[in-house]
Image (tube, rainbow, N blue to C red; front, top):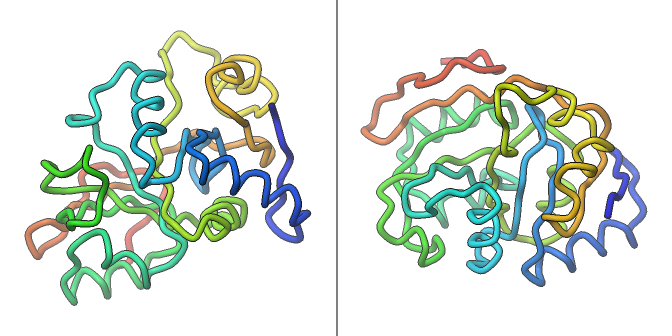
Length: 203
């Protein structure tokens, strides 16, 4: 199933349909400010397990990102010191993944994790979905092989053709990007860029 959403002024019925799907443990492919991603309600463990099966990964080892609707809810899930909070405030929303010490509210599947990546993308569709479920979204990149045509990661029609049978919905937000987020490690009170992606960090 493919469903169109826009940066602004979406049909509340359509947004509600997506929210009900996620709240019920469904998984979606949706656009962010960097690339299309696979996502689910971050506290629905069976949905997380489904994503792991699709990607052939171990949830205990793979680095997921957790997408938040705003800064106010981040501290419920991760530990943030004052300097890191200010750094994030200068750069979010934006194409960054900040690696932070994990908190206690994460799903059981992450209980042995010492760190987790968090995002607040600068994308109206992402934020609409996230706010509609009043919870963060667990997110990871689409499965991709270097021999694949890049359009199968950027064109929602082709994404639906390849992955539509594996997920509950593909959210069409137009042609997506190809550059990943900039990853910033903030686990020890300092910050270090681990991967330079789309975002230029304001320090």
